[in-house]
Amino acid sequence: MKEPHPHRAEKVTLSDSGRRGYTLRARLLIAAMCVLLGFAIVAQVRQTQDDQFNGLRQDDLVRLLDEVTQRNEQLTEESEQLARNRDGLLSGSDARAVQEDVADLLGILAGTVPVEGPGVVVEIEDPEGSVTAELMVHMLQELRNAGAEAVAVSGERLTASSDFVNTVDGVTVNGRLIEAPYEWRAIGNGATITVALDIPGGAFARMRNAGATITMSERDLVQITAVREAPEPEHASPVETED
Image (cartoon, rainbow, N blue to C red; front, top):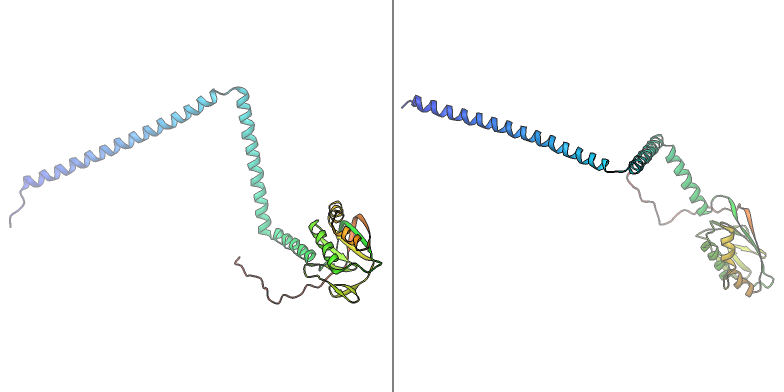
């Protein structure tokens, strides 16, 4: 076996060392150029910003400062509000308040709780017995369209499941026979309800054409104590959602 030539081995080693030295110097030079370029860019940006501000009038600078101050105050208020919301959610107090509000709303809509508030009271005299279930339904529809939040007639709370039926003895509501004079109680905007019921061709006009006499009064406080028991659903069930 031949041994490697000593001069040849020494030549290769020197060539590799020279290339490594050249590569290291090139990298250092490139890094230095990048640093200098970065300083130049930053200086140019600062100079541009200074030139922009130097070109503004004193009034413009004051206005800009006011805008920055107002924006800072808005961000501070938003930050504080978010912090309060976070604390409320962590404590669970807001969640309980929301649940109570939802329960109250559902109770009003379902007619399971007594309610009170501003609204109207309407008394309908029917000497001829000509007020039919259809006229009662029309009256209820007009009240709902006018924004009534709770309605009762002759001691019967009216909800989405209520019905009016013509019978040989008269009109029944929720399966109970009611007799004239009929008293309607509705909680809502009294002025809006009054206009809606008394428009030409509306509920009042149709009842008057049937021979009824109507008396209505707006009140600051209308109490509806009649309640209904919420029926158990037979087919519908709530959908479970992941927290």
